[in-house]
Image 1: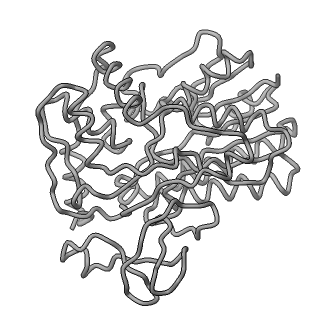
Image 2: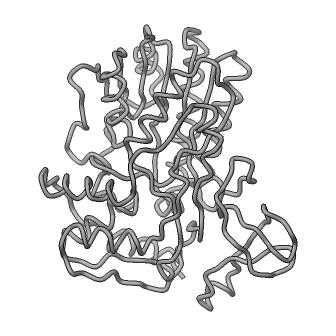
Length: 372
């Protein structure tokens, strides 16, 4: 197997992927900036059989060293989080967009990488896919107006006729309509990699990750996934903060299934120049997540449904996974309840250190008028 570089490989998703690649016999090198907001003072999650380098993809010399002897790259390094991106725009654009471009420049200069897989995000869709019965369209553009949101009418409406719409699994054919700075940078990262791959003859795949959860997710980062945020609240004896009415729906996919998808993408020599959804194909509400976590943790803490809207949030988006199933023979293995039970087991047994920063993050958004 070719030697693989995993950027961001000491983090949540990256560390699970590194473990999987190493177990499969692949030689792995990791480049990770060890972002303090994610890792705190820790050195990340490390596999004794992998090689680790600390640095950012914006550091040309460090990237050159990281690419030595490498024939395949998985690019996970990125600033994540919708809310924070709405007021730290320059940092997100620099590290996600410019960072990806800088990495691609060094790959082109060295000329030895044959495969490149990048982590993209479901956030690039904006709202998911909807059908309008009145218009007879199963991919209709929808909108939630400021007036609707202020009136607490949470469901989107058809842009064409103003009528009610029905959410559907989102396919890769759906138009891209990012609703946040983070989502915009993810779209740009994906497009940079696929354009680069075509022009330089490098096999390239973008994986559009839906809502990833599982062990090793940072509990102190208030801009990470909702499962981790809710866990930190419940473990601190606080109510999870649920925006809108909690019935907004997402596709929660276990990190082990995500790691498997990346491995399949690396190994699929005949698949290239494509963006693929990675999820479960099943819809779960945010309120369900809060209730399941409380149940598994054995605490009687009700979520706080604030009936407010955060700029950058969407109402419904879950994956149609037929394309990745066909292209990579991918099938999710972990059911939602089983995955949440494993997450809670890790929380109880490993007792990871964390600080509940949710209220501080909420205050930053409210101060900037990003919560209605």
